[in-house]
Length: 344
Ligand code: 5GP
Ligand code: MN
Image (cartoon, rainbow, N blue to C red; front, side):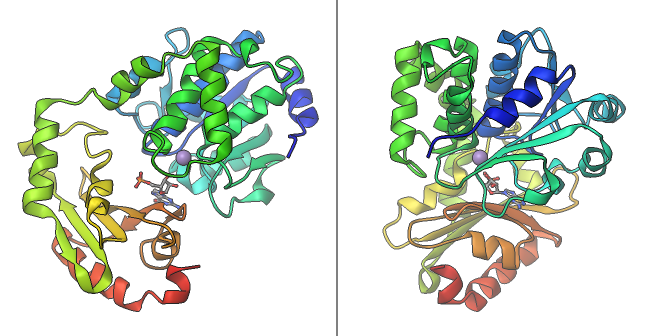
């Protein structure tokens, strides 16, 4: 469907102070989309700042614009609040609910800025925004943002007019959210990849930077998780792993190091659902990561049992209990999860 960008164009052309916001625990799609938008706006001569609620993984640091470094709200909450209050356009990327900004929900609501959402999650809070680009029929927010940018009057459908750093950020978000073309891939995803590569994006170089960038200790931690921590529950077609703070210390854990762990048990033929439970560094909660093979829908599991949400095949949430209590809680959830919800 063609995207109508008239309202967005008019908001941007009038804007003086634009703030781009991603979600807490930002992943490749969050960092890719905020930095892609920043480069697009810069090429249009627009002033913009990026705010992320918490730091991004080191492997994505090369996307952070040198000229206007990402402001991390956890490090400087006052400045983040000041920027949100002073903005005339807030562009929210890769989250469906303002609560996913963790600290900034009230500030965003209180700001007089026009609020724009670009997102690919289920059930976005449509009424909290002045303008929304939202669909689940794309791989990633970066794919949707690519379609939006392509439809802007100055780009006019020509990928050659997308600034190269913008194109690179878009590619990274798509590549990471699809697990390098293994899930959530639509025909438009390949079209996007093809156009971006023709534009000059170095696919192999980005892959190396983002996916083949881990430490030796991270690779050993991955082995430990599979060998010693993976529990398979054949009666539920499920598997799970627990990652404690003690293990993180032992393996010199850095943010982003557990990226991809939750997918590993899905390589087992009869495992349809995989869960990774990670103790948060301050022990306040357990981060829940869920993955499934089609046609199983883990979004319903995340919403009903784990205070979260996400996508059909990739969701997440939080649990407020000691790590030792998680296995029983997970099994209870699997037992109570109805087939109707599971295949919804
Ligand atoms: P991950 O397992 O990679 O942390 O998250 C997978 C997906 O689940 C994310 O893309 C996001 O859509 C969703 N997600 C993760 N954590 C939360 C959460 O705490 N709340 C909600 N609503 N969604 C989450
Ligand atoms: Mn995403």
